[in-house]
Image 1 (cartoon, helix red, strand yellow):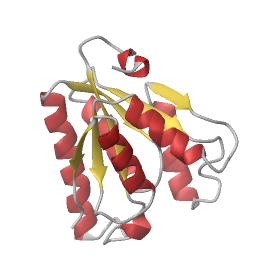
Image 2 (cartoon, rainbow, N blue to C red):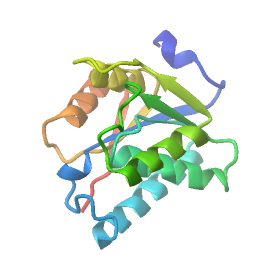
Image 3 (tube, rainbow, N blue to C red):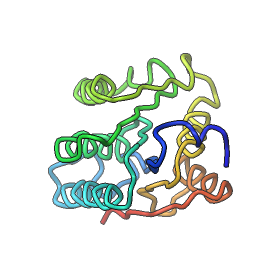
Image 4 (cartoon, rainbow, N blue to C red):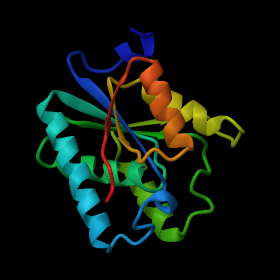
Length: 174
């Protein structure tokens, strides 16, 4: 077992999230689309199922799409399960600087409400996203992935998890 995976509360299993950005999701940025509403419900349901399996520490990379949806679901579920932990992981300080203002505010709220905030870097570098993604996997017992098989950062994260012996569960957007 990697040393990083031993941190945290004893007996609590940890789940990290990864997934495609809205540009690669069938509903794009339209969160009023019934497919998006259904997907967000499925994410929340999957996380609640994981809580029933003993997962209590959830890690989100704070990116648009799956990361935000999952982190919001964890915060909502904390009302019912106050012992669960949300860890937000930032790849660099200005990650959201070019996002639309509404998404910046959502991300800022998640980081403000998180139980743990981790920065894997402070300045943008060519490898900062990969470093953040490796942190997520290295500190998880399970990776919940909104992954359709398309190439990109999500694919690399899923492959890294599999190579590291971390279980991957896919949740597919319709």
